[in-house]
Image (cartoon, rainbow, N blue to C red; front, side, top):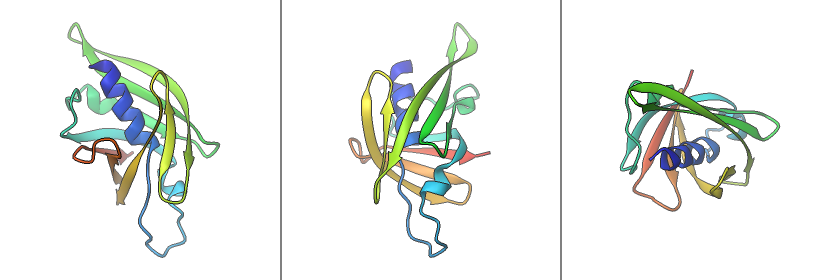
Length: 131
């Protein structure tokens, strides 16, 4: 379950596209910063609770990212951290998840949140919030 959640967190956090809102924001700038997991819909292996909502990913301008995954282990909330890279194409972001390889999907930005829908599972959505 932890590997699935780490993969989904990485997919969500490192994969994005944005709609054109005529403010000259390319979408790449929107993804920069630290985003926290807040919701998961039809996402097998991802349970949202007070521990997993501490999970976050930080996107850096140099196309690196750091993900911190939190999950319960023996009734303790524990974390693990991974370093990765990401890149943006015209409408998609691609990221490299340690152990799993590259992944893509779409992201819709809405205020301080973005919703990720992975290309490999279009019925799944995961929501992150910038704090």
